[in-house]
Image (cartoon, rainbow, N blue to C red):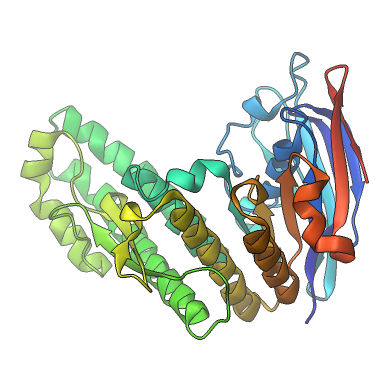
Length: 367
C-alpha cells in the first residue's frame, strides 16, 4: 500500500522551539523527554498540516515563541500516496495564518485532501463524562478526516448561527432579517448531519470483524432534549422559522447540529461509556482512533498520520505492546510522546526514536 508520512519537519519560532529540524523515514516516531521540553509542541506542529486549529485548538498568536513574538513557521515534506508535497503553514503578527502547498497559497481544506490526520491527547480522557461540546468536536474531527469539506460546513453554520443569535438577543422580529441566515444554517447543518452519520457508519464498519486488543464502542448520534435536527435543508429551514418565537424567548437557537451529542456504549458489556472505569474509557478512545485509522486506510488509500500524546503512560506493558503492534500492522506513521524511552521499548527498531531536551529556554531535538 502506498504510504502517507512526513519525511521532513522544520519548526521556526514555534512554541518552545526556536528551531527544530527532523529527518524522518516513515516509521512511527517515538518522542521522549522531560515534562515541559516541547514534545507536545512537535505534535501540535504536525497537526497544523490538517484543517483546523490543531490539536490544542490554540490561536495562531498563542503558538508564537515567547518572548520574541515574531511569528512562526512550520514546514515539511509530505509523502502522500504516489506524490511528494512541500507543505508549510505560518503566521506573522497582525496577519492571518497562511498555508502553502508546493510553494503556492492554499486553503486549509486543501491540506485535508493530500493528508489525513487523527489524534488522541490527554484532554480527551474525560470525553465521556464532561459536556457535549467536546464530544461534538471529537465527532467532527472524525467526520473531517473522511470529508475535508466538513470543516467549511461547520464554519459556515457557526458564523450564520452567531448572526442569528445576535438578532435573537436584540429581539429583532422582522422575518426578512432571518431568512438568508436560516437558509445558510439549514444547508450547512444538513451537510454536517450527513457527514457525522456517514462517519459513524464508517467507524462501525471498521470495528466489525477487526481483530483488536481494545474494546469496541457502539456509537449513536443523539440530541439534547427536543433539539433533533431535521435531516434535509428544507425541513431544517422550516423548523428554524417555526421556532423563532421560542428562540426569541431563549435568546439563542435551540435546534440544530450544535445541540447534538455523541453517545457511546461499551459493546461487550452493554454499559454506557460514561459509567465505565477510567481505564476502560481510555481503551474505548484508543479503539475508536484505531477504527478511524482502519477506515481511512480503506477510504483514502493509505492509513492516516496518527498523533498520540502521552498515550503510553496510561497503559500497562501488555496494552502498550498491543497498541504498537496494531499501529505497525496498519502501516501508519504514528507520532507518540512519553517521558522516557522505556515507554517505547516494545516497538524496538520498528520506530524512529527522538529525544527532546530543554537547554537555556530553547528545546533541542535529536534522533
